[in-house]
Length: 362
Image 1 (tube, rainbow, N blue to C red):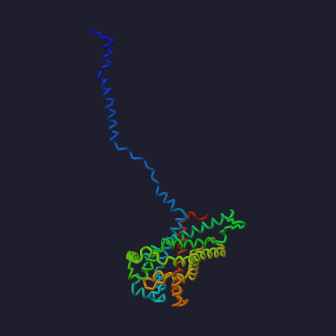
Image 2 (image 1 turned 135 degrees about the vertical axis):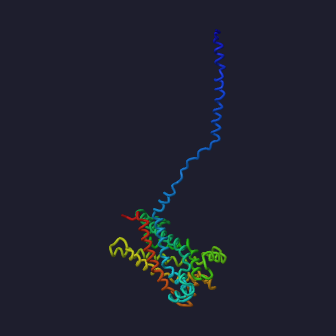
Image 3 (image 1 turned 60 degrees about the horizontal axis):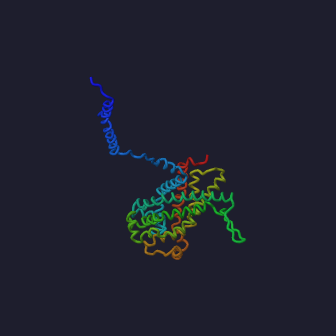
């Protein structure tokens, strides 16, 4: 038997193939794993998307959005009910057809059928929903902002301006938050929705020329471009300022006086209807001559005799028809404005009770 020397044993241990194979194959196994990693698709990153539903829910619960939606719903419901009176009033104001309510009503039925009483109502609905939403939302917001500013200026010193020995102090105490808010509401809503008012009047007064909304937009644009959709904006703003200021001021004043007299915290629906109607009547009576001039300017081009400005329109009406001409269609306007104002306030307060139930004081 041959004995192996230590050198031979060491040499055999060094040359064992399984050891060499293991050394050679180890990089190959790592390469396969690397290839699998390179060819495999990386896992998509985990994105934290915002909870849109929760954000929308929180937005809808805010007071401003609740008041905005309440105004939109109230305006839509009111116009759907009172569209025939609006059609008759517009025709009488601009001098189309009969000069009395019954005669105008009969003429519309004979020429256009019952559908004629709702002529232009589609655009009227598109107009009144954003208009009432913006108007009532602006009124509530500005009224709160003005009231808060007055309270802060009472607690702190009012801002002052010193010119030499003269010291001028600015105070908001003489301003009525309701009157300022009413004026702001009328101006903002008019600037935002005036083109819809122009389209509504064209569809109402001349349905043969403007049978639908798309044709009306196309023809008005060809006549004068985008600026034609804002025709009569200046007289509208001039007429809206006294009306809107008086309208909101009268409603808030009468509501507070009535509640104080009756020693109650809020009005019933019937009382809202009555006080809203009276506020609309007062505001309309004060500003009605401006409304006549405004309508003449907006649709005068259709009759080929458009006055150059509001003063000229008022002078023309007064010269041709006297004081009565300045209030032509006033009764039809009152028949429309009074129920419209009353119903709008009634619906508006009702929707606020629904949408702002969590905001009501306990």
